Length: 517
Image 1 (cartoon, rainbow, N blue to C red):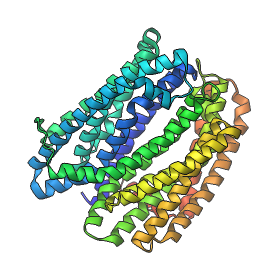
Image 2 (tube, one colour; image 1 turned 90 degrees about the vertical axis):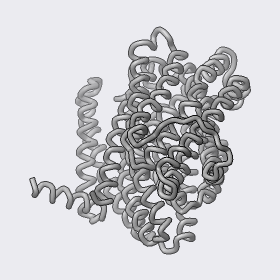
Image 3 (cartoon, rainbow, N blue to C red; image 1 turned 180 degrees about the vertical axis):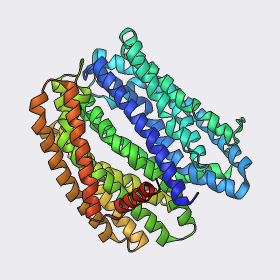
Image 4 (cartoon, rainbow, N blue to C red; image 1 turned 90 degrees about the horizontal axis):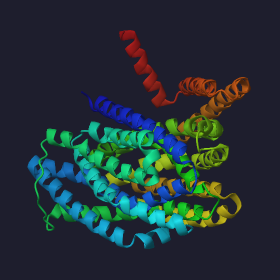
């Protein structure tokens, strides 16, 4: 199987499982909205979850980014046994680190919640502390999950890491359908803990299949452990900086109208569907390819791979951005508005969706560009640019929240993302030399024009048919999907007519398959 076909197959596997997981995750959010609404309890749960997972999300994602190339290096230079030995060493170190964090989290939970949710008082504050403590085992499970994910992906085993969100979401859904009325919001946090554990369990069989066997070992003098630390620190700081963005948004939102935190959370999840399904899949597969070309000092090939990756990201995210901006209100209304999630919650969430969507393309490019920097073993530049982004976000938050409320917080995040992307591109141009920016601009403009035409036609179709079916949700859903489907077809036709290389390649491949059939 050629590298291109193998990469395409791996990306397809990741997209399939991620899309399925996102659908289940979306259903999970819909059920949470239905069962608990968009009030003070859900605000408290989301803030407690942020406080619980904040540190290990930062540490785990940083470790996952750095161990993948190290696993590959160890296997090439020293063999599979040494790779497994390193895995066990890392696993045991992360275990003890997580236990320490859990103990500190329990002791300082009230202080943490005062910082993270400074607007919470009385009963809401007490519930936040309780939920935070109940969720502490998630720290241990997350750290272990990230390590197994890195171990498997370094061996080009993508199925289990991609599929691990399936049991995660199914456990949530099962709780919400069967037990939520009896155990309430505290039970939801317990379900979160069990769901986090399931992500480890699903990866263990795949790890054993490629030769993994657990062994207790801690060697703090291991040179690869030290190398992991050196490479991880800048990524860790960069990840921490990104989390600060989230914390600042939520902290300011805790002083706004009730339901503001939940509206931002639901909106962020909606926007992350595109980023999580398509962009992450592309970046996950391209990352090892970029790393390999970087190690070979083949910069021209690296830039070619990067160019195709960036163009694919633009082709996917620009129409998604236009679609979400135009269809934010009907999307939220159709899929969320039921039970305790009322029309006010729909309005607040859809407003946040629009302003988050403005920065969607930039957020997607950030994911791709950071992978390029990491493949070049440059973890410092993304860290510095991330720090600049946080500074911009905080300043804009403080200004815009006064005039726009929670909408201003979403807009500030988008503007900061756009500015950071421009900085990353400029720094990369200096590092790599000529990047053929004109080809990216050409793809951007063609995709943007096609997206505007697509959005205009789809929006006209929906608004033309909506008065006929108003009040009937099934028919409303049907015309929504019809409008989006027609828009998607128009978009791909226009991209083909505009001769966007990546779209033409896909269509030509489909033509060949059809002829063979």
